[in-house]
Image (cartoon, rainbow, N blue to C red; front, side):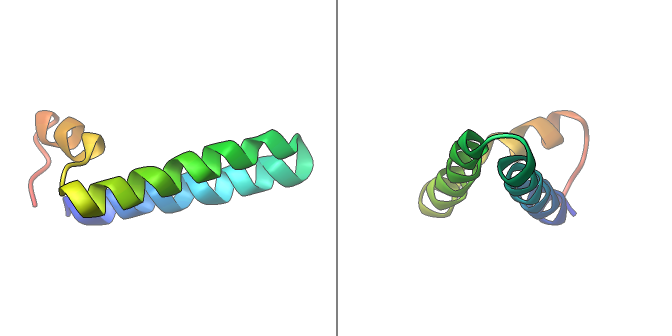
Length: 61
């Protein structure tokens, strides 16, 4: 369950930032890059802040 929520958040953030880059300002692409870097970091370190937050809210795997 937690993994699905993390993927949904990441996908939503990427799509929202791409839409904002198209219609508001290209600098929103930096947010897209930030999300991508965080996904890469979590795949290497196996640690994700959103997972920690979700766990504190009582959401389990």
